[in-house]
Image 1 (tube, protein in one colour):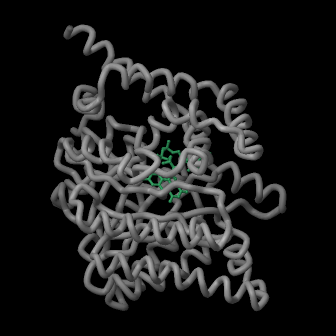
Image 2 (cartoon, rainbow, N blue to C red; image 1 turned 135 degrees about the horizontal axis):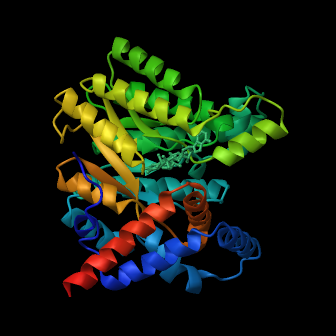
Length: 389
Ligand SMILES: Cc1cc2nc3c(=O)[nH]c(=O)nc-3n(C[C@H](O)[C@H](O)[C@H](O)COP(=O)(O)OP(=O)(O)OC[C@H]3O[C@@H](n4cnc5c(N)ncnc54)[C@H](O)[C@@H]3O)c2cc1C
């Protein structure tokens, strides 16, 4: 059975000082009070443009991000590649919601695709729709609200950006994943991604949508959409995740008095996640899947189901993915066993990546067991090295 406890493999390329720093960071994020105060201070610093780079870059940023530019990510990409792990460069600048920044982000995504097309250490490209479109506009389209003439033009520019990025990925034969976001803009994102899938997935699974299995309706969406794709003669492709906006979704549903779209228990989310894996593996000759999780049970389930169905470990349509700085024990041990593994390597200017970092800190605090698991493994590796020396 696949073991995730092998810390010698998991931390093979990590120095002693890296481990010490990682231990310090996970200890910090283990404290909900510290994370709450720290996140509020960082949000305030963003608001008043207080410089925090000197403090953030050598600590939490360097742990969870590859660098501020693609070239700064070079050593992370190289280290991962030495352990047979591919990188997915993820431009993680958030918060800028204007046309200039949307165009700039589009150009950056194109440069990531270009890099992926010539660098075998990079497996896929990715982008977040709100990096190239205004949230409120996506929401208005989602609600079928009528748009002003300006807004209609603005939405047309969003469609053009989407098409430009996907056409470029197709031209360079680089698989492209589109992140999932809040449920009240996700229908708009789905329609945009579905169009691109129909256009570009005829001969291979190239464009991936993302499904968040913490939503009650997404397993059904994924299976029905896939069947439609199979019948129409193109490949379906999905990144499976549990979902990152749990509290925000539940709070909004409560505030606006509608039924939360989120499962009422973690167990239901886990069950749907496994069912989604099963569906994808069962249809793997007609679709591709990227299993994006830090959950060891989900990964074990996927691996055992692949074995049961005699799917080779390195089947090109099955990828496992984790976030940089998290669950190295899963990524490195899976890769050592011959599975396709990628890490999202977030990058971007420190001040624009702060919202991403705050989410990571909050997630690590709220995800029961995740931080203690990371700490336990880091501690184990420190002890193993000490005993050896
Ligand atoms: C490669 C990669 C790409 C990602 N891309 C996206 C993306 O595009 N969009 C996005 O939203 N997220 C994305 N995420 C984040 C992801 O959705 C999860 O937040 C994160 O991975 C934690 O889930 P898990 O499966 O790793 O671990 P677990 O610890 O098993 O699960 C934690 C998750 O379970 C769910 N959950 C927790 N408690 C409950 C509850 N009471 N009821 C119902 N559900 C509950 C929540 O989704 C929570 O985040 C990505 C993650 C990875 C690794």
